[in-house]
Image (cartoon, rainbow, N blue to C red):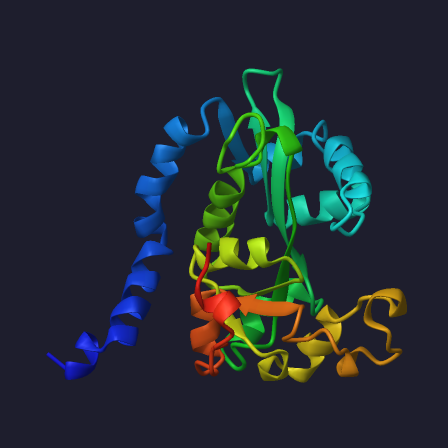
Length: 247
């Protein structure tokens, strides 16, 4: 057996590969019955057939400071693509208490499968609209790890997708790291993806050209799932002590 398998980093990577796979996440998903009692996670055809959940998510994005506002049309579109998961409380008339989505960054997503074989990095999605009702957050009144459950499910279900996530919130960084997200410098992203994800307004960045945003890799971080990191050629990971020691 190759000695590299016993290298500390290699062992950690192998553990990440398994723990974030559909097989590896199945036990954790089953445990959610006890960790998030009464919460049902809904995606796919169930969301496409009904629209009762959409106004609740629109309202959440309008009232949550750190979320980009999403319209009903945008939510219907991402549901049609099968790239959104919502959490509902079955004990409270199925009120929506959480959601997570993958938003298309490159367009032409219906032709993605055709181009993947020639360029595995041609198409990307951005993980976003991660929201949990304040009462249901891990430190809220109901003390439930719903964000972890949503993160785990959407990453395991989309391992063939190239996904990135950006944030200025260290708690969100650590949440992603618990589910195998790899911290990388912005400069390692494909140029068009780098430009597509850096769309913050001047009021936040202080610059008119976001390629020169001073927040990057200092207070704004980018992370990708392990399969995406591998397809990128395993770029060097961040050594920022705040990032390598998740809470």
